[in-house]
Image 1: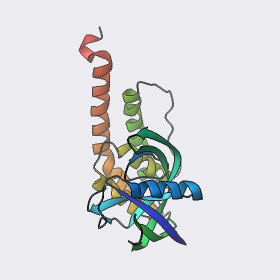
Image 2: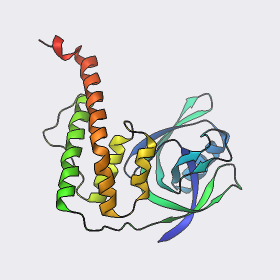
Image 3: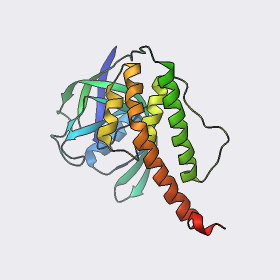
Image 4: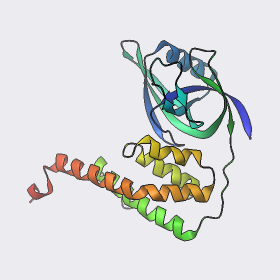
Length: 220
């Protein structure tokens, strides 16, 4: 395992590897964090808050496992605010928190996932259900593609499920996907989320179609 020191940005959001996340920065301490990360070409860590608030809370308590966020772009939007586009890279575990800077920092490690023996039936069930989610998301986006891109590795599939669920399910249900490093257990936890995820994605698709076409009953 590789250990290092990481600047932290606690949020009420769970970030997954490969997931894009826009963040609006306006606090001076996070302007400093942004400047340091950009100068050093380093990511910062997104961690879900257990207690405390995102803004101005020096005593905020994050969960122990989060994901590094790579800065893709940063654009001033007025009023001392900056819109930062980030993308998740690697999961990490906090070993020790430090409160000696304007923002939280931590000694962290990058644990190596344990593949475990994944039953083919479980992998097939998650893959099929996730394909259904992606079909609903196509309706939300107003696009159609004959084939749906599905990650081939179980770990990447779980991250894709978590990413799709980020705007549908509450963060407390998603944090276990980040914290679990056994491949089979991660897939089981993703499978347990797919029914509410499909239901939520279906509702989003219905609203999108209704707004776009004025409702199914008015199309003929």
